[in-house]
Image (cartoon, rainbow, N blue to C red; front, top):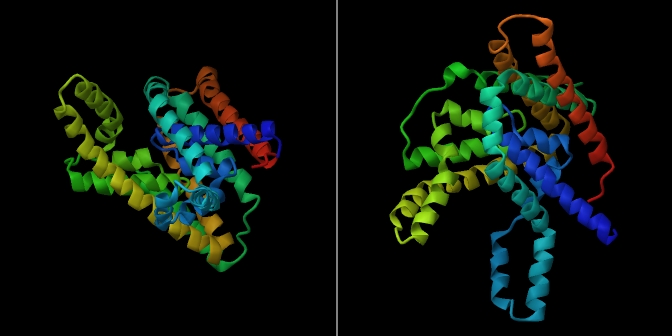
Length: 314
């Protein structure tokens, strides 16, 4: 691959991570869905489950050429550069796009959720072309996947709950599943657990704590850092646990697993459809256009991403 082609590939991976991070900030939308749409889902699962903590033993030999070569080979084997670039995209988007997404969802809910309805619906349609639901097992797992996503997107399940360190740990573990399971929204799961507002404010409070520490007051940083560690620790446990489970399922029951994952996406359409219906009070040409145009744009975005991803070399 040429240098220009290699740079293009890495920029593409970063942008795909940014799309995942932006999606994860919206209740009802899953970063895992975006990973499937842009063609990096299986690579993401493989890279996460290839990480080996024993690789740290090579750090002691970094002062030697052989040690550096061995460590570099180990990092390439685990596809760590891919994870780092993708993760950078996810984090940068989550930190910068969250405010804009929040504004879109609160100020323009009908067209915003209509766009995501088109995005998710078209994604499922594109992916179902590659899924054969032609056995009893695949039909059963497809029904289970649809039902699971349909049930967990029931807004009536949401409620306020106390925020403690154990609750934050569990919330991080559950919410991160959205990075792996398409159709399952991490932000919405946090809403159901009553932790969305607090968890979404962790980056802001951490940044404020760092600013206070630089000014000589370390108290706010400690207050922000402890919840960050609890939530982050839970996220790491949840991320790798779900990744290993998905890898095992893909190896043993590939077609059935994809039928389950795509059915999760279809079941998750309940939430954006409900949000659109709640914010369109009367049927008129203007209200129809407000919904129909974003749905079409979301669908066309998926078609464009599908065509672009198919032709991209990593």
